[in-house]
Structure formats: structure tokens, C-alpha cells
Length: 287
Length: 74
Image 1: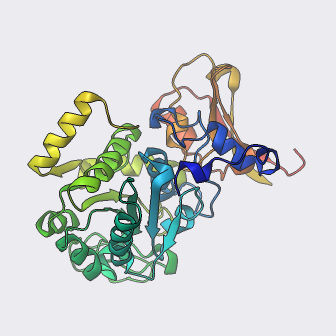
Image 2: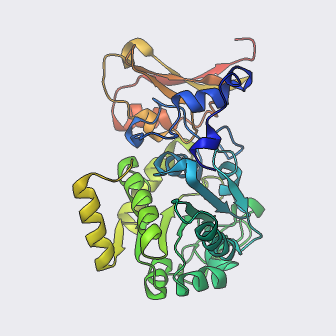
Image 3: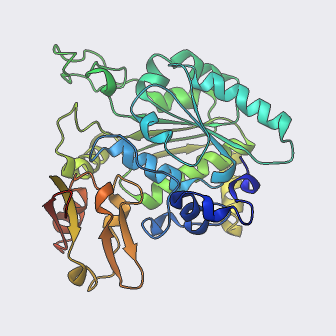
């Protein structure tokens, strides 16, 4: 998109919808916003039909507020809950067929490099456990093997929430779901380990309980992907419907899972570590 | 009939915490007014999950937000 295309022509502003004008005047385009000031500025995410109290909706909100360069970012998603909110933001969104997001993102990243050689364009895939680790597994893995320079974020709700509650490869062992009444017989797929082995240069596993840390991780993943190679974030985003979590307790659940099996893990290659140390020392990270 | 969060603004203004706004799952819904130093709810956007009540009452013990029933006329 680019900042030039976001700003309306003089004289035209008064005819634009209020939400758009607010976005220009009070939104994050072309300036630095601190994610800790959520609630003070107009967010690029708009109203969406995700469930009340959805932790994935919360993660999508923090994700959009954390983008280092929202006016030059393209987000890809696939069938699943997250796309319901991802598509309702002032950032171009591409809806892939189920499972092919990382293949589409590979082509898009290369095309943007050719079309805009002098500009920084960020490509981010945000898809669920089904889209990335089950149905899209091969395309996800192969994009990492090819060292494609974009960020992949898995919003893991541990179930096929949209279609009635089938178990996914990321459902925990033993869990009983509406469409998996016998209980799951296998462990969760070790997604972050696979990412490291497949060549991701920056890999994080987290439960989004701290907005500051979540934002930092998202920014780091995007910045590392610009220069070095594929990056991957595995975020726990519970499904309060299929796992019967009362809406007011989704944060409590996220904190409990953080203590249990979603403790914060961050892996990066040596060159990425040096890169972060350098830019964070110089405070060049655009917030 | 709608179930939404409502902030006791007078009570909220006595604190400088701004924590509830960081945990609302909805964008542009639970906002913060810098001048009055209080959080406020954009009620038509609130889905009534009460997560902010958990943050304000259970975690911070400040009890500034409550869930209320509203009607379209209100």
C-alpha cells in the first residue's frame, strides 16, 4: 500500500467515512505508536465477528498494533477463526486456500522484492494450527526449507473451532472434544522444534499474557525476516467455546497454560542476536 | 437487551493504571481518556465478555468496572 496511498488528497478528506479520517488523524500510519498505549490511539483493526472474549481476537488486536510498518505490510490468512478479524483491518489481506498461505506468501515476498526493490515490504502469515501444522504442513515446511524471508505466526487454539470442534495436530494429548469424543491419542506437534530444524532464524513460543513482550516478539520476528530468513511465532490463543472457558477467565487460562506448557521460549541464530543487539542499542526499532 | 461493561469513571480516575485497555479483545472499544484520566467503554462495540472486569477486580482489586444490561434506547 504505502503511506502515500493511505493519506487522502487535500479537499477530499471531508467526504471520507469518519473511521477512515480517524485512522489518518489518530492511527498508527507513518508514526511510531507504543503498544502500551493501546486505547489511546485509533487502531487499524475494526469491528469483527469473532466470539466475545476470544483470546485469538485479542492476539490479532495486539498483532496489528505491533506492526513496525503497517502501511507497507501485507497479511495472509486462511480458513479458520483468525481470518474473521484479520480481514477487518486497514492492511491488505490475502485469503489463501486452506493450507497454501506459506506458498502464496513465498511468491508474494519475491514479487514485492522485484516490484519494489528500494522499499521495505513486510509479509506476514497469520494462520491457525489447522492451516499451518495440519492441512498446510507441507507448504509451511517447504517455505522454511527454502529460507523464504517472511514471518509465519501460528495462532494455536488447539482445535478446529470453526467446524464444530474436531481435534487438530496441536490439540493436547488426552483432550476430549465435541467431534473427538474418545480423546486425542497423540502429543501436540512440536511446531517450534520443527521450525528450528527447518531453518527458521527466529522462533518463539508464547502465551500472550504480556502485551509488551508479545509486541516485542512480533516486531523482532518481522525485522529478522526482512534480512535473514523465515521466522516463526507459536502463540497460544485458546478457544473459549470449544474448551468451555468462561469468557472472563480466558486471561486466567492463558496465564495457567503459560506456567504449564506454554512457557516463553525464544530462539534466534547468532547473526540475528547480533542484529537485535545492534539495533536495539541504537533504538532504531520502529515501535 | 445487551450486556456491556461500564466504567465507574470517578473511581477509575483515582488510579493511574490503564491496564484494562491492554487486555480487551476488541479494538477501539475500551478506550482511555487522557484528559479525564479514566477508561471508558465504547458501548456499541462491547461484546460483554467481562475480561476487563477480571483484570480490574480480580487481578488489581480496584472494582472500577461492572457489567450492566442496556437496551437499544438507552
